[in-house]
Amino acid sequence: MITHRVISYQAATAALLFLAGCAVGPNFKRPAPPNVTGYTAARLSSTSGLPAGSGIAGGGAQRFAEGLDIPGAWWTLFHCKPLNELIQRSLEANPDLKAAQAALRAAQENVLTQAGSYWPGVTAGFSAARSKTSSDLSPTANSGALHFSLFTPRVSVSYVPDVFGLNRRTVESLAAQAQAARFQLVATHITLSANIVAAAIQEASLRAQIAATHQLIAINTNMLQILRNQLAGGYASRLHVAAQQAQLAQVAATLPPLLKQLAQQRDLLATLSGQFPSRQLPEEFELSSLRLPGELPVSLPSKLVEQRPDVRQAEANLHAASAQIGIAIANRLPNLTLTADAGTMALSTSRILAGGAGFWDLGASLTQPIFQGGAFLHRERAAKAAYLQAAAQYRGTVLTAFRNVADTLNALEQDADALKAAATAKSAAALTLDLARKQWQSGYANYLDLLSAEQAYQKAVINLIQAQANRFADTAALFEALGGGWWNRADLAKS
Image 1 (cartoon, rainbow, N blue to C red):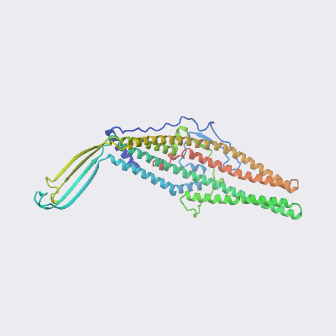
Image 2: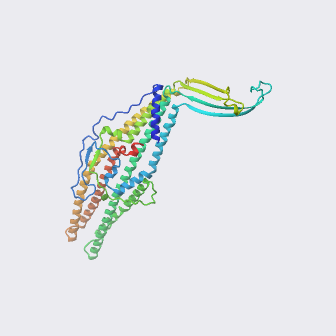
């Protein structure tokens, strides 16, 4: 397995590093975690919820459990079997995930390739030639023959001692790049699962909105028919009929955009699962099939920088940039190369192993850059500037990570209040509509009052559905913002 080979090379490398001395350039130190104790200005403990038995999906209260670990398959907390099956299929077939896996393998192989430079290079060769020398010159062969064959097998060894750590820093940089590729794989895994959950929740929301819109169309169609009957009997005016027709048309006009969005969400889910949109997914999602997690883990701020894959990737990039400084410095220093050759030369293959036919040589060369137009100096300065850039990018990534968590925590608190208000508004609008309809039918209310009550009810129904979806979506966003629990998945923790 590639990982075991990397570890073996690292063990051998450590011994060579001890013998070769220190590498030039800075030794990388992991940045310390931010010295903060919370994500938001006001500490959050729990959210509000609807009374038990409300029958509204996602209406329960949620408690923030500080320090609670995040499961690797966090999406199972929604207790939706179709969602679990879809995500599992997607993790096996998504092309972005497979591309990230291949990128990691390539980065690991690059580390092993460069680590091979720690060892001497050995090559073997064999040459055979047929020659004729001039009779005016001394014959090459001892026998005096002008025509002869020459057979030369040989072994050559070359070794470049890593005196100033050029190779060590190069391996270090490549290993850091492999770590960056590893956390890119982790990030792709988390983003994929989070996107599927978000798309499934959006599909469920759209299905609920479409169902509510169909009901509203039916209500308005029925009202229109009643008004037409009353118009025929002289109990309603054409103005009332025209107003109801306009109301029905407005409600009907909201249906095609919802159907379009639903189709797009289905296409998105198919693509995320590695399928073409033409293939129908077996899973369909409803808000009623999702259960809102009642206990939400909130990692300690000091742990967030270890859990977020984008922060770890930025740290790996910072490490690689640090090693590049050592590479730039080492390129300005002397380079020593040791060589050795051994072999035999014979006029016939039968005498290749004969005594006296052998030869050998040992050599050493030392090169020192003297003048390159300032290229090496400016490369070193560029490497230092790139390190400062990577350090700033790391800090920016950390700030973004903390902002993501703070945003989702605040959103969850406001989502709960919004759902509670939306549920109250929907109940009040339903009661108002029922009373307005009865009063209108009894002749005690104007039709315009009924129309206003209908519009308020329609808006309240859609607002409630959207508020439900927001609670589910922001709950999933919190798991993603906290790192997605990848360290509890064996396939990612050991990748």
